[in-house]
Length: 314
Image (cartoon, rainbow, N blue to C red; front, side, top):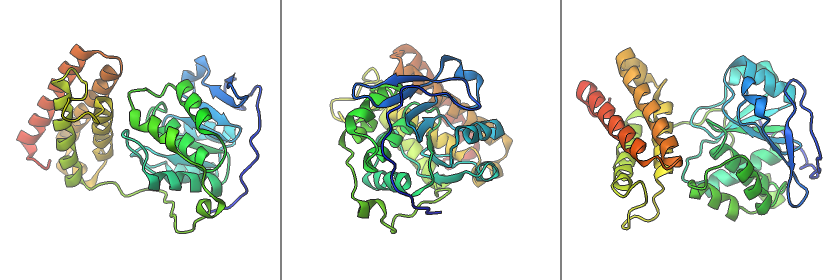
């Protein structure tokens, strides 16, 4: 999987036309770096929240289905890196000559190990490179920036400007901190062969995932009691990150072997909880406190119904 190439010189782009896509709006940054905003009409295309950081580094939401991978190929993408819980679609990617990497991150931030892996991927995988999370607004742009800082493509200031354009919520403080504190790596660090890139990372098993859901729910309830703000005894909590992680865990479990073994009724309950967690995350982001309280109550009731029918571990 490791295909080495030299890190290209940063190119200043004044405008861009995409083959196979509608034209993008390129925003000139304060230091003349091209930061491409998604076109207003792009929702009709398969890739949502598409942004270009440099001529060969992109981010967007999860590419779903063949139209999305065809659009990636039209952009010239050679490597897809998913930082979502869901790995890239290897079969579709191979059909279009695209390599895949899976480095799942959380809404809390990006670890030092993940930062090195992202920078290593930027330095060793074929370009252009595309990084995705689920919606393409938060984890994906942050991870792309952290990797690009590490590989020497951009500065921290450029990263923060890009995340602003990508509409990464300021409430995800850990993601912003990761971009603020990321550092360029040396050539030896970038090409460290002990860093292993995988096509599909092993996610927590089902029982561990359920235990983590319980822990996150308890923390989120503490925040809800304080108007969805961090409680005084736990000032480091970010309610929106907790809701995002709960949503992501439910998505990870959707197609888990144990979910399938429990049958369609169990999976339907899990999907209901997933959708409530997604709604809750959006309500917290938009300061809809009453709506968030209602969604949290419904989420707790959904989880309780599932536990009553299927037991504490599903």
